[in-house]
Amino acid sequence: MVTEADIQNAVVELLRKTVVRLPSDVEQALNKAYETETDEVPRMQLKAILDNIDLAKKGNTPMCQDTGVTIFYVTLPKECKVDVEKGIIEGVRRATKEVPLRPNAVHPITRKNPGDNVGDRMPYINWKVGDKDYIEITVMTKGAGSENMSALAMLTPSAGLKGIKEFAISTLLRAGSNPCPPTIIGMGIGGSSDICMKLAKEALLRPLDQRHADPEIAKLETELYEAINMLGIGPMGLGGKTTMLGLNIEYAYCHTASLPVAINVQCWAGRRGNVRIYPDGKTTFPTHEG
Amino acid sequence: MPKRLKTPLSEEDARGLRAGETIYLDGVIYTGRDEVHIHALEHLEHGKKIPVDFNRATLFHCGPIMKKVDDKWFVVAAGPTTSSRMNSLEPQFIEQFRPGAIIGKGGMSQPTVDAMKKYGCVYLAITGGAAVLAAKGIKNVQGVEWYELGMPEAIWIMDAYNFGPLTVAIDAHGNSLYADVGVKIKANEPKARERLGLK
Image 1: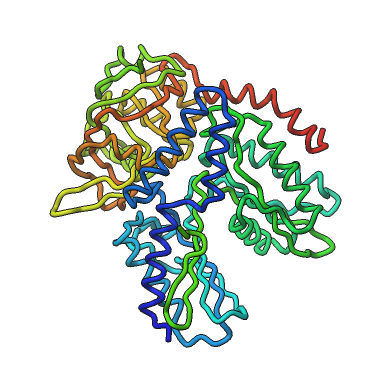
Image 2: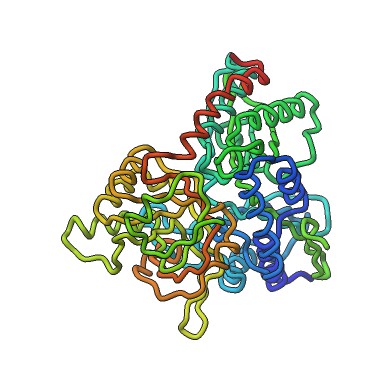
């Protein structure tokens, strides 16, 4: 039987792997970007990023000092007797000390920092019940430099597809050099205001080389990806061909009178990880195999 | 060969740098981000002294991950934070405390570029997120001030050695690489819009 200690240990290991090593699709996209760039300035920026990725792996050290806030997505089996929430919270507390993670979580008004990345609604956990026998925990360690560039627009239905594209290009022009480009963009379309923002973040969980199953959405992903990369913002906003490593969209049906659209900006360090905890307590880390 | 300079940078050192150059630094650097700017300016307003001397010093927009082993602090990861968050405070900070260099990422707005020109300060860009690479250039941690602001927001006093590569992104003559890139982005925007079928 899975115990709370199993959850805790799995979460500490998950956080360590996530902040130290990028998923292979993100690392591949960065390598490709380095090969694509011809000018010295963007090549130097990407070289520093790639060197840093290697150093982090070799030293088992977080690749970026901003280890973010921890956003969790949990899928529980139909029957689950262990306190997963408590396991996650204690796991975050321990990982903050053991990995270590930077203590980032503060009270929003007093800015008081408890020092352990735990506070009201932090770590934030999104829950689902699935049909597998294992507990699946996915985490995004989300840095603030990129998150601060995120945006929501409540468009009118008449704004349509053009309105969505207009919002995307203006949001990313405004973000410019700030979110540590080359970025990864998650877009939400539809739902309500809160659902739309959630979808934008969830879109970041999909590997960069997978297009949306709906061909119309897949086409929009490709169009926006190509267009934004024509802007020349470049790595770290110092100019170049690679402004973005990938763009994923998720949608939900919405009210006939509204058209919400949201953008969640992720820096080049697109850190996401997941762990499956089986009934016998064994774990696998699908995003961090090998 | 990229230039290698010692901190604190004299006004002559700073004015000798041109946007686009790559340099490396040796010597003391101080971390300071949102709260350090707010706190330092508040201290000044109330006539209180601040614990470090920023005159001609190098300020690093950075909230590092630090580790304490047997009473001694070590850097785990120390990349730059987004400098634009300090846009509203930096011109006043430069005027009052007169740093010689600011290290960060993403660049800063025109009032800061103007203050840098007036007081002989440069903005040095270091690759965002490359925090292990940056930490390699920190050989010793002298200490910490204002630790009560939290680990990311405190002033960490660090000894840098061959710290870089740093790109002079805003020089002390009013030139900014970000402004140059901005002109190119404006020129590229119609092509991108055309790809999207927008005007």
